[in-house]
Amino acid sequence: MDPVVAEARTFQLFIAGEWVDSGGGRTFESRNPADTRDLIGHFQAGTAADVARAIRSAETAGLRWRRTPAPKRGEILYRFGALLAEHKERLARAMTREMGKVLTEARGDVQEGIDIAFLMAGEGRRLFGDTTPSELPDKWAMSIREPIGVAGIITPWNFPMAIPCWKMMPALVSGNTVVFKPSSDTPHCATLLVELMAAAGFPAGTVNLVTGPGAEVGDAIVSSPDVPVISFTGNTETGRRLATQAATRLKRVSLELGGKNGIVVLADADLDLATDGILWSAFGTTGQRCTAASRVIAERTVVDPLLERLERRAKALRLGSGLDSGTDVGPLVNAGALSKVTGYIEVGRREGELVTGGRRGSSAGLEHGHFFEPTIFAGVAPMDRIAQEEIFGPVLSVIPVDDYQGAVTALNQVRYGLSSSIFTRDANTAFRAMRDFETGIVYINAGTIGAETHLPFGGTKETGNGHREAGHAALDTYTEWKSIYVDFSGHLQRAQIDNQPG
Ligand code: NAD
Image (cartoon, rainbow, N blue to C red):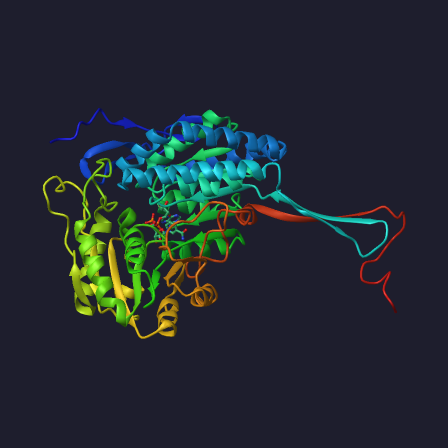
């Protein structure tokens, strides 16, 4: 059946509170990855000149926004969160249509946006600093958080609403203004978000949206001397280039990058529970989560019973449009992702044993989408390419090890460090894992997915550069500490000298 396609609309940039065309006059398309005949719309291919306009508008708006009392800024975040909740179903459906994740997960993506909006709305009445004693008499000491200025927000397509909200909510509540450049795979999701931000009452210029290619729009944001802080989520190589470029201007750059997350299954694990956790982590969002599990590191004695369960359950997963209630696994995001995953299947065949999957989804109704079967390789060695490189698709490697120590070594022997998990019934081993796993997030008896917005989110090693999103930690990216000393003694007092012996 042909998709019903209404006349595709042309969407605009949002600069200084107005919806406007790009000065460059070019557009690009966004299409449904489950059926590429379905054209979602035409979007502005922004230019460096558009970015310059957006930055100027953000700078101007920032003069007033940073003086707006933080609790009042928080109230606008609260209204935005309430609007997201009101429009959750519409937003989730638009997300599934544009990037493919199944509808239940798309609802979860919007929910993360709601959660962080409400969490950061509350920060409007906290934004805590410290008041602390001075070493000198009649002197007051305190530290406060101050906004930095214009924040450049550059985001991927895999959490097209949650990730922009994780970044924009803490940036805005702490008094910064933003220039937001979304992935070109999800410009419609970004547009819908910004429409609701405008409706919530963010003043003109505090939020600016510039869609368009990373190499032009992203680059113009990163290279501008007037954008002192960049928050980027995406591929490790893109992040590395961007951070190198930003370093020449000594910008603050928060990077959330790739992952190669592993699940350890020990001999004493509940294998049915582990199977549930592995399937959800490996094949949820078609393996396209930064926290997706692409490695299972299992004690040799349980590899066979675990593989038997995984194979049976993976074969039963239904591919299809995420809008169909019977679908378990949606499409990959685009043709490039499909060809990358297909390339890794050849690598995997050389390195391990293909247990299930390994092909494009071929059943009726899938021919116009980027579908790929949930795939499992067994007998993979820790340093094999499929166990080391981020594939970002529904491909799982099972790595046998001799014992807990072997599992820790294999788990940590990758260049990424986002999420990890262990299935064991032994409390002592669980606590050792919390200590030994070198990742920013560790789960015990659950898969590698399930972050909540009030805890810090981010990874070690090449997953990032030490910053964290969400939780109070997110505020550190978007604020400068200012330490203030008030001397009410009426005479000169010298720290480290007066009031000291000798
Ligand atoms: P990507 O790096 O291709 O693109 C991310 C963003 O950067 C897009 O908006 C893109 O247009 C922009 N961009 C591209 N080139 C640029 C340049 N030269 N200058 C400035 N901006 C540029 O990543 P993607 O394919 O959209 O996302 C998938 C990747 O994101 C995966 O590696 C995944 O692990 C990672 N990711 C990480 C996290 C995390 O929190 N660690 C979360 C989600 C996704």
